[in-house]
Image (cartoon, rainbow, N blue to C red; front, side):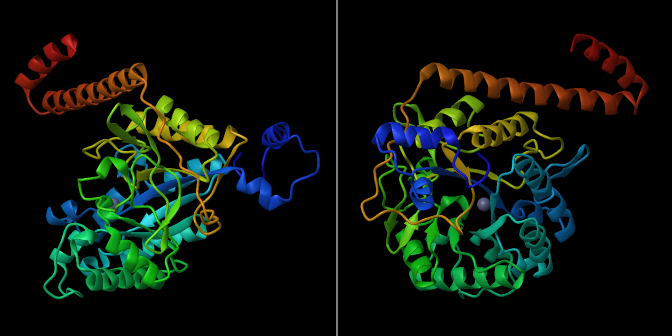
Amino acid sequence: MGTDHPGNKSVRRQRDISGLTHSYDRSTKLAKMTRAIISFDTELSAGLYQRGADARANFESSILGRCRDGDFGIGFQMDMLERHRLTGVFFVDPMPALVYGPKVIDAIVQPIVERGHEVQMHIHTEWLAFARFNPVGRFHGRNIGDFPLTAQKKLLALARDILVGAGAPKPIAFRAGNFGANDDTLRALAALGFRFDSSFNGAYRGYGCDISLDAGNLGMRTHHGVCEVPVSGLMDRASRFRPAQLCAMSEEEMRDALDHSAASGAIQFSAFSHSFELLSRDREVPNGLAIARMEALCRAVADDARITSGGFATLPGPPDRPARIAVAAPKPLRTLRRTIEQAYGHLAHEVRYVRDLIYVTVHSSRWGKIAGGVVLAIA
Ligand SMILES: [Zn+2]
């Protein structure tokens, strides 16, 4: 279901299990449902900045997802969510304001707020290296977790103020860039009044994510004063966690992970993507596979009566004794099917790239026409 109204199916199911016939109040029904939080890390590219992109060019590529075939960024993503009557969460990184000025952050935040989706906070501290003014003095770092607690608090407060200045409601949820948070990040968030963190991603343990939680438990629980909302996922091999990310999971894996959360009675299912993830890696063309996967995820959430859609603003906190939500076990054939699907996707993109190259050559030289004709005939 795309709204907060539980479907008839789930109400019947609850009655069957409990054997009770009295009607449930609304809060009881909601507590029994799983909320799918579909989030997009929404960020300008520090790499594009380093290659000379100005604010507009960076915004068009990274946020609007603009390529020669059209726009496939946050506007496209919101259109798709709305077609399925879903609400998305956009974790916006305000740090580029220190380099490009605040206007570009206004341009990111305002359409999201106007369309009724949620803006929450993201941070990429690598931008500090390019800022004229560093609010934490001599400290630099790729991840927020690289900084001492007091510096983290200062950076998070600054990021929050930039977002609010851009027109966002006061953010209550956070996700670290590169999932690079540690326990001090959670302490800093708690001190600043944040209620939720969503930086815990089992695939990044030991690769920047240093939050001291058990990656085998996907349940929401309080840790150092904030409620951790881990990124969902499943095991794709015995010892490898696959996060619920659009470009990392097949439709089948995403459906299985979602179903597992709902069947386990999880409060939330957390899937994520990026503002630019529906583009090819070189950002030249739309990524048909990622678009199809997002469409399938939206459909799966909208069609499942056990699942609601929404963000953090109305998400209940964890119960006093939160249930452990185990990670779904691996299925080797499912992993193999995804590996083949992705290999085919990459191959299709490469073939298109080679064809484009030939097209350009054909139209720029006589010898190119001859060579191009031969290769096209083979391809
Ligand atoms: Zn990011």
